[in-house]
Length: 491
Image (cartoon, rainbow, N blue to C red; front, side):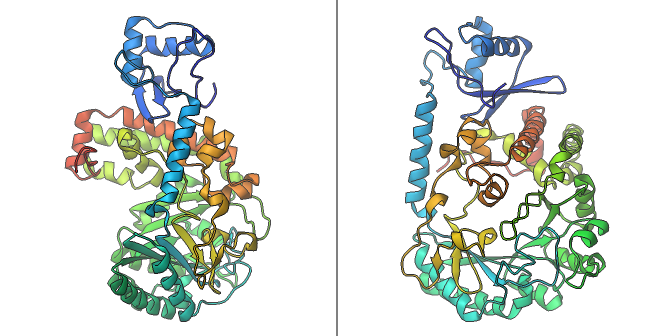
């Protein structure tokens, strides 16, 4: 079956909205891929769709027709005319162009590479040991120029963000301190506010650093691979010594001050995702993010494929977690339901469960649009991953004009044949441009293994969401396990 089932195949064909049909443990579902609306299928409707996929001239009986109208796959007598593929493509291109022309596309977050140095030697580092091909520490003056550039080029955005990155950014904590103070002053002068974040390996997070981060309400992302074996093998110190014993107590101190800090683990080699996730939760992380190591464009190293070779094992693990979540909801155990949702993948079940509130995602992230990175010398790049790749240098923080963004102003959802045909395009947005280039050579063509894995994840989560009743969702809302979505008609 193709990623999206065909709409028609002839003059007398029945025309349906594009959809994706799948089965989990004998439960059949259909997703209207244009609206991302999922519905459970009865046997008769599932059988009809299977027949229609072979011959679009087949006509549905009345009860099946009613089910198709209810799912949004077929317009009712007074329903809107379903847009065809060309109309949807034109609609999406207009939406992307409108977004890019609006204030939302003006830069709102700047990533300052305050340290292109690191005290660790992670085996999978895409930044070439944290140097990004250059090395050095950012000066306070360069950081200030970056803040000024952001204020000048943020348009009508009143809420701005500064992300401190590396290498290990806490190697340059004095400049971070001075930059935060300067940003607050710049915000007062311009009528804008700044939020701050830092991604750290936690090795330098002593009490003084933690007190500063807490006083300035930083969002914290901690790079940590979970188990002692994985951490010591993949994230040793520069001298080759193991790092787990050194960073574990610092991480616990950070989590004491920042309970919602995100634990970000990189999956590499034969790493067991389930073991890593369990270790992150045991450490105390409420938010966990597991990502496969990407290719390294600076060194030419290919993407890490070992994780994708274990797709079946990973998918089975996610299904077990989904089962545990559904079971916790059914027995009205809010603590266990919340604990299961700490997994970043599984947490998406709450979004999928209220898909009518979701908007079409035409870009994977803000890279090259409302998010840019500044290297230690003041050069501007689409995002932190591209730093050091001179072919992606956009300009500098001293420039008066907004730099051209080139291909980053094109949406994979509209410009990639693979993405246009994908049933998850409005959820995925086309994948990370850097990871796409590293794996396929094109920013618009994701790794097929990534697409396959994301599809398996989505089907598992849609199944979990589809098994929850209205009473189940109300239980989650009332116990603050899930935030109740706002009414789209509220003003």
